[in-house]
Length: 148
Image (cartoon, rainbow, N blue to C red; front, side, top):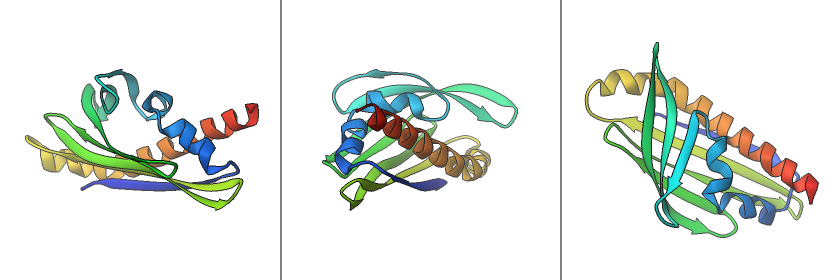
């Protein structure tokens, strides 16, 4: 499956990271291609993305299901639609009381028609998206930490 992972070291306590990532409303708008999302319940939401597939631009709706919250270290989730499936997580590991390593991971697999072509495109797009997502989330956490 096409996947990507990116790690960032933040000069913030692990609990500051948890305060941010435990609520998907905080980080959903920071995911590349994000348009909007609607919560179904505490663990499920439907997200709409603008996706680029070669020269084509499409809107993609994904059901995001939070698999687990492991305070203060990890949030993991699944994503599904008729054409895609995958999973991801955010994991924080305290390095020092005021320094934390944040890892963002994303895996997406196209299913159905044109699956091989789409997965070929995703192999290069997903690592970049995982990096952009981790950098955007870490920048927002750092910004909020400075305000406190």
